[in-house]
Amino acid sequence: MTDRDIDQQLVERVQRGDKGAFDLLVSKYQRKIFRLLSRLIRDHAEVEDVAQEAFIKAYRALPNFRGDSAFYTWLYRIAINTAKNHLVSQGRRAPTSTEADIEEAETFDDGDHLRDLNTPESMLLSKQVGEAVNRAIDQLPEDLRTAIVLREIEGLSYEEIAESMSCPIGTVRSRIFRAREAIAQELKPVLDTAKDKRW
Amino acid sequence: MAARHIATDGKVDTEHLSSLIDGELDPHEAAAVLDALCRDAELQRRWSDLQLVGDALRSTEVAACHVDGFCDRVRKSLADEPTVLAPRQLARPAWRRYSWPGLAVAASVAAIAFVAVPLMRSPAPDAMAQKQIPAAAPVVASTAVLASSQAEAKAAAAIANARALDPYFAAHRELTGGSPLPRAAAYLRPGVGER
Image 1 (cartoon, rainbow over the protein chains, first blue to last red):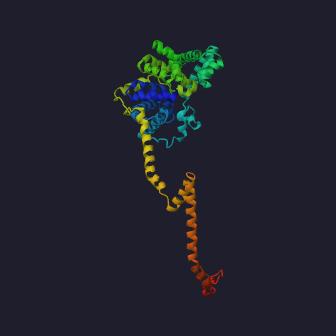
Image 2: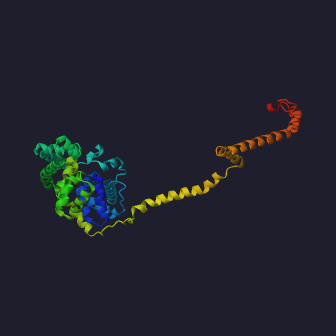
Image 3: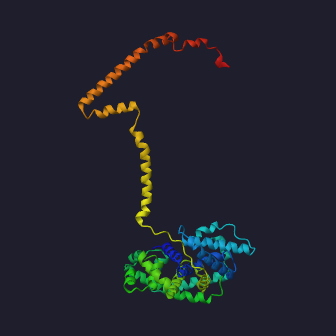
């Protein structure tokens, strides 16, 4: 089951009246939406408000979502439109086109022309997150580090990793999970302490 | 393996979530994990953590946008929202889903056959005569003989008809003088083409 299938499953649960499934979509995509909106809106308090509004609009519109596009692509457009409306309502100029960003809906790639929207605070926090991830990976036992790198960086399947590491798939699954737990432990303090230093 | 764990002890743990995120569960396993995930607040928290780790590994800039408590904020806002319900598609048996297109195709074929078959069965009289002779020939030898004699009779009649036209052709030749140009060419005014 692919990532898109999982999203579709969650969407169908929401469409059947399960609000809890929508929480899972929010927690999965909130950071990507924040990142997207922070390119359009500088003030981080406003970004949070607009992100919340976008998610609520998405929830209301979800009965009409048929899965023709990926959920995130659909959510992305709602977020962009919400941001534009917000800027217009504030008497600010909304971007006339976000065509350059459309492909980014499916990726994390940044356009160079948008990099100047990074603030010193956001760059510092991003650097701290990177350091925490690297520190966590460096501290991992060799087998866990290899498994997580092959999965997250090289994009190999469990089966391919099992072949590469000459171990059962169950072992691969366990190693990847343990590596993620370790990285989460290292990451959380950085993001918790940096709560008030966003963007 | 994850499926066996879920099926035997009915318990979903974070390792299953990790496999779900990686797309390494089959649909049945994934459905079981999603069921548990939608019910269990602790699993939901772990899901958030794993998603955060995934974002951090792919893009530190995205992970740096994490805001604690944002999900709670959205959840509270949605608590006042009416629950959305998509209109469900009518549950139809599979045979009905596939039978309508089949019926449409069958109806089209029947309509075409209704119009085309009678046309194909009533060809022009000459063609019918031509068709009947070779079609009958291999069946019975005597029929073939009869058919060939009929054909000879037809040919003789045609020749007789042609002879009846001989006086007409003779008169035509006399009028034109057998020249490649008809006599009427003498009355053509010279220079007409030069105007």
